[in-house]
Image (tube, rainbow, N blue to C red):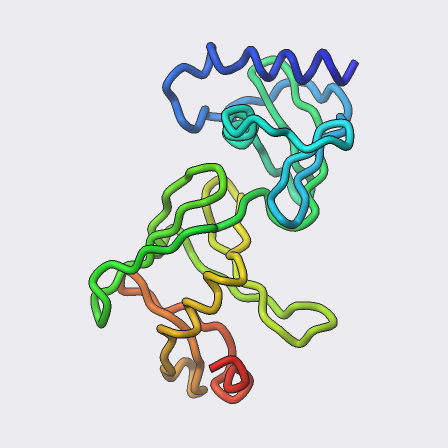
Length: 193
């Protein structure tokens, strides 16, 4: 049964055409059950326990991921199947800094080739990392889907970070497209700089 779903989704490529992101938010097909597909915390996609080695197929699946609450699905106009996501469905793997300084823009590329400028629509958020005392950064991509920012890029963000006052408290963070994204109180980030 699950193999039929994989084949059906693979044939979706022709139907999707050149649209990079089909309008999955408008699709409400019947739920057809869960399939043995997961996205590991390192961004690797697995099907039946085996990594999916074809980047084009991973990009196709990524284009039809839909999140409902805490659950993730692959959807087509005619079916919806559940998948597991260990952390976030995407990884931010590349960072370009345009116009360093007060007018800078942070532009990220994900592991599935989405290019997103961090701004008021594509926020950066920083969460405490359980057990380590560290921080995990995430970038909003689309439709309630986030990309975890890789550790290497996180350290690039720390290197360009600055302290600003927010709500009477000194916060360390980064800015992009006129927005400031606070990572943590200034005193808690000192060990990373």
